[in-house]
Length: 114
Image (cartoon, rainbow, N blue to C red; front, side):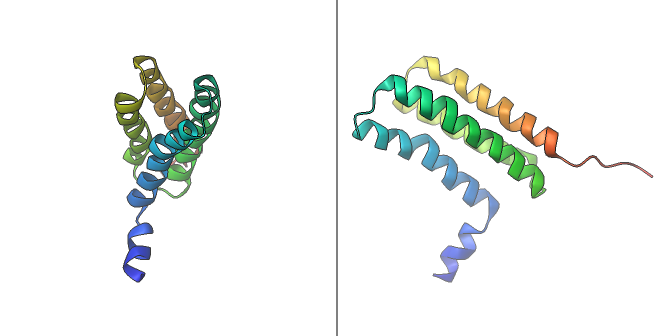
């Protein structure tokens, strides 16, 4: 059990697992619950994933993690789109990357040379 906790405390693992949940598991659950595709795109892609992308960027900046961690969510979303959705959804990966990067840049502390 302690090995599992140690693995989950690694930032890359936690960002990866949360991204996996948002990009693969939640859409499959919503499809199994017969939620219409319009609602899945509206709530899932635009609202939930958009907020998650902003929170990823803020979290990476606040915890001073490597900036490449903001790429995990958009890349996993791109894989999910390739396997589960149509070509129109690729634009959302670019939007999530922009949202993560902007929130990362707004929260990142500015280092001033003395």
